Image (cartoon, rainbow, N blue to C red; front, side, top):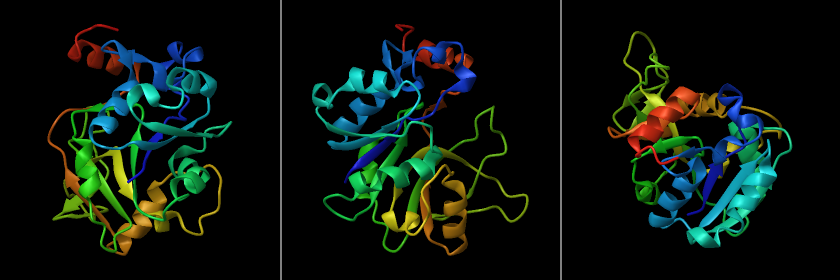
Length: 228
């Protein structure tokens, strides 16, 4: 199974730090956010990676190269201007489906988690279009995103408890079939698939950080030992 690391975000809420450093290369615990992801993906057996980039993307390519230092092969999907989640995946689809038209993992570069990525390799979609990893709602997103109903993920129909989408998923290429290229979120595509009962998922009870602000970066750095 291939994996895509979504690394094209501009990180505007992280400014002024991200004025000169792309967000994926911001450091916590002595290494960049994206290096944490690559190490965990490699340990989980993901060796064929696609990484998109936009803002200051040449710095990301220079830092990671072809992935050899991490024990992986990286193929790059430059965007120029960020295309958001679905737009970035659609732009990279020729790389993701080059050898085989099959499900692939997707991980946001700007998160940190103790989730075991090897679990993604064992996801059997069996007619589903997506499998989402959900986590407890963080303080900055208390309302959450979706309801986990058994092993199906759906929108809330009332005052139901929701979980937050972690930015970790397995997608089938068919989720993006016939969707026009361009800047767009994956959320509308997921909601349409949910309405058909074709999105599954699971709950991760462990640690998860969405590194969207300098304060959250400091919290993660402190957790990891303050080595950055």
